[in-house]
Amino acid sequence: MVRWLGGGWGGGFWEGGPPSKQGLEPGLSPVFAEFLSHSFSVPELRFLFLNVLPDLTDRVLVDVGSRLGAVLFGGHVFSSASGLVGVELNQDFVTVQNQVIQKYGFEDRVQVVHSDICSQDSLVQNADVLVMNNVFEFFLEPPEQIRCWRFLVQNFRRKGSLLVTVPGLDESFRQIQEALPSDWLEELPVNYDLYLTSDSDQNDCFRQIHLYRVM
Ligand SMILES: C[S@@+](CC[C@H](N)C(=O)[O-])C[C@H]1O[C@@H](n2cnc3c(N)ncnc32)[C@H](O)[C@@H]1O
Image (tube, rainbow, N blue to C red; front, side):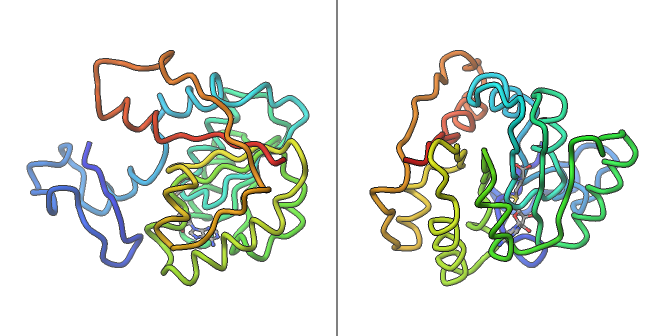
């Protein structure tokens, strides 16, 4: 599958340059290829819900930047979370997610909010798990990224709540030259070995998944 690395809807870059038409699956336009990317794959979702996170019964998970809803739908299939809430800036993606929710009857536990995460104080304060898969890196300018991270540092504070990030926080904070508060989170071990395969690209993706707990 073609891997789209950056830029959201306006000008990013393709790994190894833009794909030729022949590089796409038959019948797929480059636009559709973009729709397939920026999300966790099914193996990553299985790994996330079955191995990285604990049992989510009676817990609420918030996917920051839920895009096409992969985390929400994966959570519906692979976990018992009582609520799976996506927050997404882009109205087009919110519409697509709502169509899927309706089509597959996910309304019992899945919900999508069209919003900037920074307007969702109470949702973030009450979340048991936050998932952040490359949310800001490719979509926001550094000052905006700093604003979002400061909001999260201030509002995601409930002791014991879990944060899943791709990439690790050290990398995200280094890229925007922001100091990661030392009293906020502790990193928890993840057993990547369980899921490693002969596909080294896939293994690299698993190793990018980090788990933290609010102290
Ligand atoms: C890499 S995608 C996330 C993929 C998705 N969570 C998954 O793993 O399937 C990042 C998404 O975050 C959204 N986003 C970026 N900044 C945001 C913000 N401040 N609030 C809400 N959504 C945001 C972007 O529009 C984009 O759709």
